[in-house]
Structures are given as C-alpha cells and as structure tokens.
Image 1: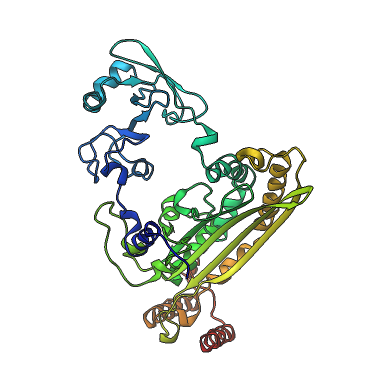
Image 2 (image 1 turned 120 degrees about the vertical axis):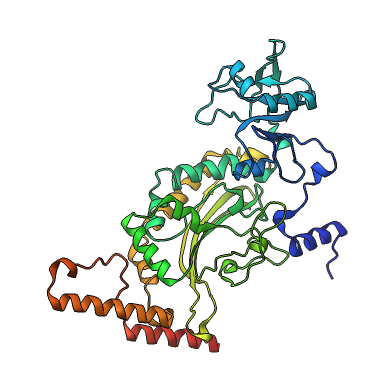
Length: 464
C-alpha cells in the first residue's frame, strides 16, 4: 500500500470535502507580509481585509473588490521592506492626493512613506509591478525619488511550469491560434466555447510541466437552460446576433475539473437540479452547482503536450496538440433518458517532432522555451490545428441543436402545434401581410425516422 504523508492527506481531505473557493488565506492569518497586494480606492469588506484599502489580487482580477485599482503594496527585493505605490496616471499628483486622501492616509499610517509612479501606461495606467526592470518612484512628501527593485530573478523566482507557460505557451498560442480572431469567431458560429489561453480558472494546474515533459490544458463550457434555448442560441450565433452579455452568461468553469487524486467535478455539474446556495466568504456558487438548472452543456478542451526525446547522441522534441469538443442534453420528457451524457463531437489532432541542435541545453529552464526549432515546430502544429478548427462545418452544430419531439415537454409540443395551426390558417386565408411568418425561432420539421433511430440507439446504450 502506498504511503501518504499527513500533509498530503490533509490537503486531499480539505479539497475533497471543503469548498475550494473558501480555503483560508493562510499568509494573512499568520501575519506574513505578502509580496504584493492591490490597493483600491475604497475600504474592503471581504474576510481578512475588512476596512483595509488593500485587497486580494484574485478579488481585484475577478472584479469583486470595491472601488478602483489605484496602486500596489509590494516588497522591495533589495531591502525586503514593503513599499506603497500609487498611480496618478493622467491626473496631477495634487488632484490625485485630494481625490484619494482616505486611502493615502490609511497606507501612510500603516507603512510610513508612500510613493507615486509617474509612468503612463495605457489603457489601464497600472504598470506591472514585476518584470525585468525596477521602478523609479516619486515621494510627494519630500519631493525626492527612490528606485524600487522589482526585477524578477528568473533562475530562482519563477518555477519551470510558469516560465514555460509565460515565455513559450501563452505568447505562441495567442499569436498563431488566436491572433486574428478567426478561430474564436468560427467557434462562436459553431456554438462551441471559445478558447481561453491564460485564464487561471480554466487551466489545468495539476499537470506535469518541465523541460522533459509538459501538458497544458484549458477547458471551457457553455450552458443552455433547455433544448429550445440551445437551438435558438445556435441560430443567433450563425446570424451573428449574439450579444456579449449572452456570451458571458453562458460561459463558466469548474474549479475541480482537473483534479487528479481526489474526486473532481463532473462536466455535467451545472445540469443537476440541486442548489446549495452561495459560499459565505466569497459569495460563490457552493459545490459548483447553479441556481438555474441547465439542460444542455457544450465543452471545448485544448490540450498541448510536449515531450523531450532522448536517443543517446540525438535529441528531439515532440509536440502534440488536440482539440476535443463535447455536448450533452438532458431529455426531460422520458424517465429512462432523464440524465445527461456528454458525447464527443470532434477530436482534432496535430503532431510534429523536431530535432534539437547539439548546443541546446535541455536541462536549463530556458533551454526549451528559447530554442528556435522547438518554437517554430510549435507554431507549425498550432497552425495545423487552426486550419482543422476552421474546417468544422457550422451546419453540424445546427444539426446537434435540432429539436425532436421527445425532447419537448407536453406543454411545449402543444404550443408548437397551436402555432403551426395559426400559421396554416393565415396561409389558407391568403393574407400576405399577416401571413409573412418570422422563422427566426421556428424549429426544423420533425423527422420521425430520425427520432426513432436516435431513441433506439440511446436505449441500446442504456442496456449496455
């Protein structure tokens, strides 16, 4: 029997049975000074930050922090002491101080000196606090200047996984696969979820990630309340009539989807008719369940694998990129079929192996990321998968969204019959003005042979 440490066991128990989004801020509880924290224009009311103008980086990025982002508290890497930086941006310093006097006074009382960054970085006016160079800061109290060391020590401060993602995966995927938006637009027309490259919520952070082997995955879902909603949305997508608000409403992620050891959340989590309310601290959907039951789910999974091949004197690197899409419908009107099962629609695959130069040092952190042959090979594989995505027929997803009789409730079927009778009556009357029927949301004709074959195939699957 494989032994497990107490630390790992407690970690698994906490993540398996507790709410992942409710895990404690241990650094804050232990009084450890964080390396950086955003500063907002209003006092916060979230746990561990009550009354503070500082907040969590995750809260700021998610739009849950109160007020506007006006600065950072960072650690000067030379002195190890905290520094408070405000960003006046386009405002005059005097105007900025008078506007945000409360935040400035609170941070001065906690840290002493405060500094202003006169950098003007558009469009946000909020410069990165870490990078290859430091920041020259202005002290509005003394009028003097100070240089803050915020340089990242790549050899010690960035893990291999983060380095490879930041300097190889993200920039190349954004440039080749998503750069001109043609892939994202085509996925939208096909009613398939868009690819999110560096959104932490959608990434697999449990994978192997090193120079010798890496696996990067990003997974996203679209949800629909019922089959009629799915069909109507698919029609709007093809016609380019889908609003940004609707797109954001349909997109979601599951926090435990990629867990490897403990129970992960199945892809049909939000299709369950169960609701446990919101979590008490961050006000998130408890257990990943939704107050609105969704009967249709569509997913897109992008998987990128890289493997170092070592054959003695010769070394190579193999890239493998795969895009998998799935969809599932809950069939309400049949008790035997009242469940959701995800079915694979597409499995697109592109692979290529490249030989490494003898001078390539595959043991160092940047050996693979900066290798020209590896980079070019990665671009070629992504270009291949891009062309395959663009070849997905739009009409295929319309067929999947097609409504058949057993997918409708008796009330919906009765309403469809009533509407059809009204249209037939208008056509019979020969009234051209009222007889012009808007077919934007009209369902396709029901084909009984198709319905019967589909029902039999599902029943046969259940019997297995």
